[in-house]
Length: 132
Image 1 (cartoon, rainbow, N blue to C red):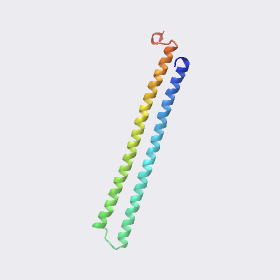
Image 2: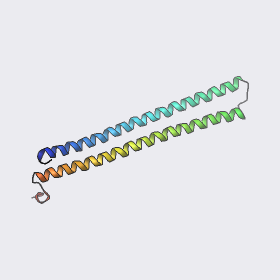
Image 3: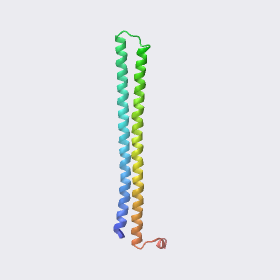
């Protein structure tokens, strides 16, 4: 494509690439918020489970030492591992989304530059005409 049509197409393509990248950043923010919510919900579940365990031991007349304490500690440790895994998984997802978005942006901008350059050349605006 050459001429003004190609020039406008190249510019539109560049704006489209930038818009796509901005949309990916927005999606990444939503993904981060989703991950935070899931981690928060898991933390809440663990706290509730730990409280239920503690209440059950106390109602049964058990001291919160030894095995009951070890079970509760294991519950909390497992919960912390779950939360870390949730956060790590979402961070990897965000990193992958943004890596793909940057690659699409770069490819789109390079393609746009090629269209614009070809169109300018087709219009007779070459490097030998610049600055004259």
